[in-house]
Amino acid sequence: MDNKINTSCSKKGSRKNTGEGNYGTMDNFFEDIKSGSIEIERDSFASKSGLPYDEEIVVKDPNGIVCKVKIGSIENSWKNLKILSINKFDSPKFGSPKFVPITNFLKRETSFLLKIRLLDGRQIVCSQNHIFPKMVISINVKSYNSPESSFSIKYVNAKELKERDNLLVLHKIPFTSNVPKYIFIPKLLNWEHKWIGIKRSDYLKFSYRKNQRTNNPLIQLINSKFQYSRVGKKYRTLWSNLSNSEKHFLEMEAKKNHVEILIKIHENVGFWYSSIVPLTDDFFRYLGWYVAEGSTEKNRVTISQSKEKNYNNWIEIIDLLKRLGFPVSICGQDMIRINSNVLTELTIELCLKLAQNKKIPFELIMNNSRIRAFLETYYKGDGCQLRGELKKYTTTSQQLKNDLVSILGATGHFCSIWYPSSSDNCYRITETDGKHYRRKYLGLLKFNSTTPIRIKSIRKVKENYDVFNLNTENGWFVSTNGILVQDS
Image (tube, rainbow, N blue to C red; front, side):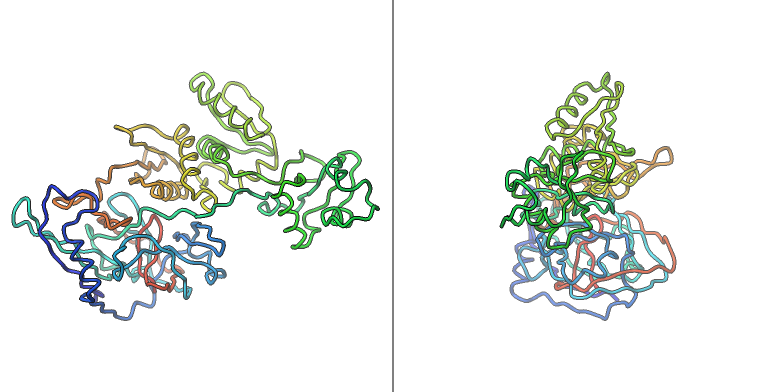
């Protein structure tokens, strides 16, 4: 049985004024909300509703960082997170994004899963009993220029959904208001043999010798925990030899830039490298090139680009890496290399390796200028131009496909997803003008940042699988590719 929210309302409207934001009935829609004429009827939800481990949600951590995670991965951390949802019917901001507290986390077993794909290529996998808020759109054309329309929301089990039913999709994920400004590499890399050091020349700025008495906490820490290497002319220690408070102190010193804290992986090989990486737009341009055209080997990153065919790109990449201070070398006419085991491991940690596994570091990139910098270079490597200014991006990574859809939406772009054919293994993410979100007589149907999208197909995919679900403060949350679902 459907759980109905009666939001039916109607109003005559001119067909000439049915562009974005003009729905004919929305004024009455919100008047009904404010007057309390909307009634909500709820039945008990199915006990086996949920999403499989790998389905994605968008959360905000206690530091305000917006990140995209797999729903099954937050089993031990959900109490400290808020989850992305939208303003519901008690607000004139219906459809606009908001973060709400998670109040419970549930793990269940289901008999089988359903894969639901929408008309624009977004898809979600869920249990047959998972609940969706389905929008019902009714249009009564009494005359060509004066249609009457009504909207209603029904809560429906996934197994009761049908092709051409309308699910709600949030396109625009909010940016992180205060994005991280740097990466402290020792904190990020999980290598056992990480060495931390400072140059003797920096040490001498504060103290002449190790047995000299000093009140400087940095020198006190070096004197107590670091050893001097005559070969490298550096004071150094293993990162694992430091307490958590000492590690935090060194991070703060590196951030203040009072002294350069260095990092090295392994004791006898490799070069020392700065432990701080500023997260500039150029750094995200580098990540764009790596995700599109990069590969990793032991101790180096290689970006492939033909000097003969793409000379401008070739010169641009070299100039970019030099601006970042990366150690660059040229191999033949089609490979540009970064020779650093530290930068190699950092790049793998942020974006993974192998084309089919690559991803975008969502927790770092959720800022308009960073996303645009990344897309600028990724497009040059793995993109092409369609009609007008619309662009198409390709990838063999399912995770990267989801990430591209999310960041394109965050910067205000509609897009469609084309899935691999029998002749290749590439996903194609294409910018659109919103053609899948338009309705005859109503134009672009958009409730703030949320649109209803028709279901293209539904099919059974797997049996006997663990699924996960949440309770949230307002009952809805955003899942993979922005699709709105009801909580448990």
